[in-house]
Amino acid sequence: MTSRRRVPDEVMVLADGSIQPDLFGATDAELARRAHAERVREQFEGRARTLPGGAAVVWVAPYDTIGARTGERRPGWRCWLCGGVEANEYVLGLRHGLHAGDPEVLTRTRCRLQDRMQDRDTDGAMGGPR
Image (cartoon, rainbow, N blue to C red; front, top):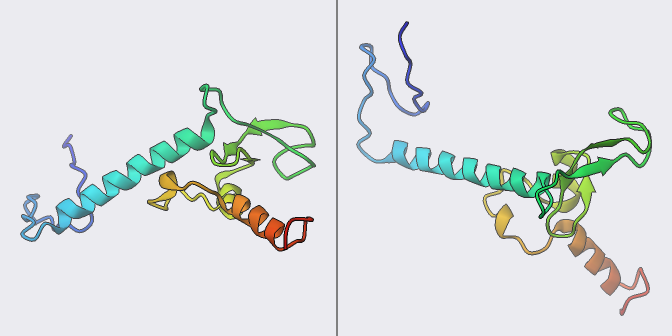
């Protein structure tokens, strides 16, 4: 059995199995970019899937859904900026603007939901100042 090395798609593998040297540093830059994206993804999941004390985030179904009945408890995703809990990562991205693929997601100080509430209050829709 032969062991296979994992080689990035951009690297040219020659017929004898050797790797063509990277003359311009593009492969190293791509590998560094992928490693950074993986670290961001791990930190994102760590923040979104666990509470500050280390307990798992739990989402409680507010009504019957495809995946849960009313009141059923499921693992959830938490916005660490406002504390809101969502059913999955997709909904977290839609409502709060936190996407794992965004390289600046960990440096944000406000989520989309907080911005919407502030806009609504300043427009006077909720009795706030006009």
